[in-house]
Image (tube, rainbow, N blue to C red; front, side):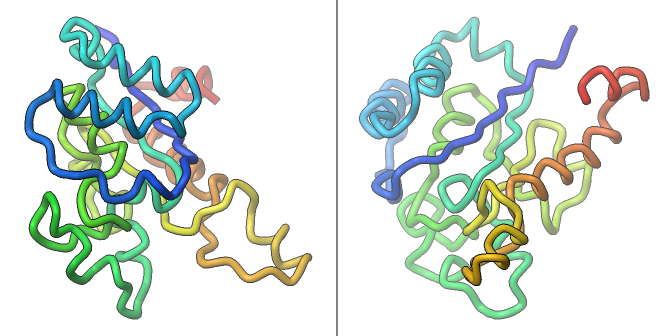
Length: 189
């Protein structure tokens, strides 16, 4: 059986923060569709088809990339100083404790995981490879699509240097662990 993975690359608008508590799958899908007006059509199709049980069984893992709209704890792990997301009220709406998310509850990636019957994606930083059997999240608060060199040349300060390129580098390293052979890895890249 082939492993099918859902890659999530959300670049949403900030109004998606703080999605309220919902417990039933149907209610989750309605809430996601309401929030999805900020997503492109391919993301909306992924969300809508995920409510079909036959489709949701096809996905074995979620791999997340992005910024604060997807980060499930990488930023908190990498920062040595205290960050707000590691304290209440962050996380209080759903988890009842801070989780490293830049939200008081779940993120869109959490709703997608729940709709697909998968666990929430653990952050890449601070976890072991064994934790990533059903997904991993490379997203970091403040991540940019371009590398830090671009911003440095323009004297623009950025929150973090964990750009999409860095996240893809982490993914390639992890993929070496999961790929059964070097030839399969070469086919992908």
